[in-house]
Image (cartoon, rainbow, N blue to C red; front, side):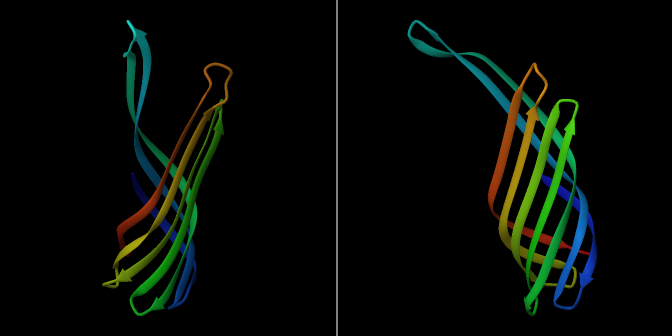
Length: 146
């Protein structure tokens, strides 16, 4: 998973900042579907299909940052994308909360928690299906700003 974005701060002081972002969220998925069967009482794999796809999605979002001590920041961000087009309905949600230590004016090292959710539903009569993917957990990152 990789993400690139640009933002505009509509509120900025020495202690706090809030703004909006537009970006690209790129994820590589690998899907495996396997059918099982039984031969002479033993379960065997009958058919296995694999596919890998790189999915680039545009996103829009909001962010906020607050300095709570010299060189220390608390931040949060939410990004989203949704589509409903010709029988395909989907969305991407991304939320994160972080604490960062800014070791130079442009770079910070941070830790936090991230939640990503993808959902794609096929709404045409045939075929029908749904794919859901959720990733959540701690993260460690380097933040660069110019």
